[in-house]
Amino acid sequence: MSVPLLAIDRVRKAFGGLVAVNDVSFEVAQGELLGLIGPNGSGKTTMLNLISGALSPTSGNILLSGQPIAGLAAHKIARIGVARTFQLVRVLPSMSAVENVVAGAVFGHNRLWGGEALTLARELLARVGLKGREEIPVAAMTYIDQKRIELARALASNPHVLLLDEWLAGLNPSELRIGMELIREISAQGRTIIMVEHVMDAIRSLCQRCVVMNSGTKIADGISASVLADPEVVRAYLGDDDDA
Ligand SMILES: Nc1ncnc2c1ncn2[C@@H]1O[C@H](COP(=O)(O)OP(=O)(O)OP(=O)(O)O)[C@@H](O)[C@H]1O
Image (cartoon, rainbow, N blue to C red):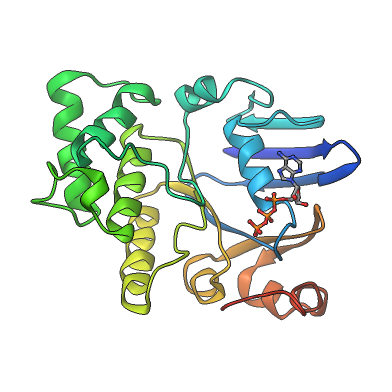
């Protein structure tokens, strides 16, 4: 059997007495676009923080192409090939769009410098729909454009795995369509993606498979259409602010 690109193996994260991630295991295949869903506070962002190295697990293993990465510093994991976007966009506001993306190329897995980094940054900005706006300071750009920049910056490191933390949140309906199309395109180019998302239409339409967490525990893992119809999953969401 071939090694999965990413293996989460009985990963646990406790904050004092609160178990935010409770012995969760799942695998992600090369090229897969996996949805990671669950009600508010179910442990999704904590899981992304464990994969990207912002947090160390209390126990369990995380393997990227068979190599253990759990507990390594975030910058090391970035170099090995994991990039992410954040729930609240994190861009460098005083810098231009292209400078932000160059930063991703310089510090990530790819590590390009100078002209090469600049060329890649311009290509990626065009790909996310920002051609002609490369030199504008990020602070002067709209929210969706800042999200595009953050995505381009993550892609600039040419990551093996791209983690999207509610990348579609806060977009209006027409921006949402554009955003979904962009994720679809990036996935079609073969990039492996885990997307944490509350927009269920996006999960249904983009992710063939999804993993569901509730109170830190994995409660479902499978084909999105059947997982979303699973009574336990529906129950987990009842009473939650699912804005889908
Ligand atoms: N650094 C931390 N210290 C203490 N508790 C934390 C920390 N980070 C997360 N938690 C707690 O862990 C639980 C899971 O939080 P997490 O942010 O992972 O959930 P989530 O599924 O991403 O939620 P949402 O959909 O609302 O973003 C919550 O109870 C949260 O309060």
